[in-house]
Length: 539
Image (cartoon, rainbow, N blue to C red):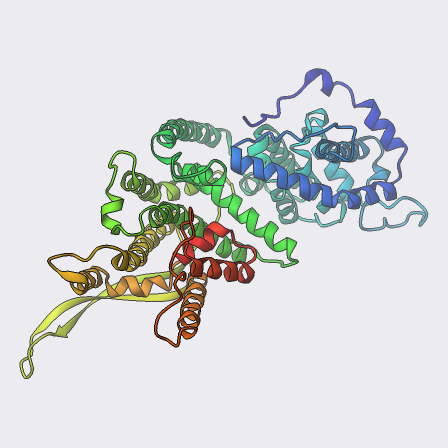
């Protein structure tokens, strides 16, 4: 449950004496050095908090260890909390100790560096935010805000808005505290940057009284709908999904398909994952590039979710045809799981757009979605007449255009649904292409009759779409490696027959020896990709 930032009356009466004493013992330069030392700890703490929010829907992450032991996660988090409190206290009782980027005008050069704007702003924030209510969970998100202020980056209302947006996760972790931060920012923008109150409220997402009442009713309705959907999810997880998917991210991803709230929050988590992943590689992406990569990652994760169903099908019954295995156990088998997932994805559609509009109307930032390609159709006349006779028939032609393009929430979910359909057809083709060689020949049609029937079921469109599916580069690499290794096996025997063990799985294993060699090569080529994802591309 998120903290609501309720004031502690007894604590708010007095400034923490220990914090006050520590401020008195430090200079502005020492506080600045401490701020720089904490940067890596802040990143680590945020990462722990975000992971807990995504995997366990827990907005109050508990850090392990002793708060007085800097060698533990809790000790490091506590050091951040203490520093944030010291900064607010310094702005209130010792403004000359607030570290700043610019030297003051007409002062002794030996005096502590001071930027009046940063001190006034910190003091205003400290008046609204009860310092005793700052916790290990909220402190890391004040760090970037305070750093922007003390670096002299806040000189206009727009600058202040950008700084406050760095603390946006507080909206989930501590709604009450984030509301205080918004109100303090509005007051400061009005009184110090001469911004009209209505405009300032709109910028910082603070609604008027009448608007606020409407938003509260809207949010309450949304909360009721979300609770009902969560109950359905819990029941369906036990009934359908727990036998196919694991706890953790897979469970969270399935849950994300049940409400627009959870879908958008999961997507925002993927955006943060993209940012962190690229920062670790020293790659800086702008927001548009982050959204593009997050959309691609979301597409890949949802596709892999369905892929897990069919990888299991490939492993357990490789000699049976796709259709017959898929339709086994109509109560808890693959078909009901697939239908429930697709039904939830289709229901999201316009609901995501409604949710995003609500968030935007309330002054909150909303994410952007991208799709990798778009597809449209045209009807063309095809001559199907015999030689010398014209017989034009209308035929539908599918046109696919590559290139990332922004998409609304409903278009993005519809796009995902299309990708899943093509992915399932691709898995059907690859499964049956193996099964046709392992399955006994039909006594009526014979082996080649089966082949003809199998080929007729797969459309040209599905073949084209295989190269557009997520991880298609891995699929193509696996295909090339597989062919190369088959050729090597035949070459060893003068191209007359393959090695005896090449297509034979080892005991208690699903993959053949040649597939194991391909997986080994793929691991070397795609070091950051999970073995499960590589196996899905191979099958």
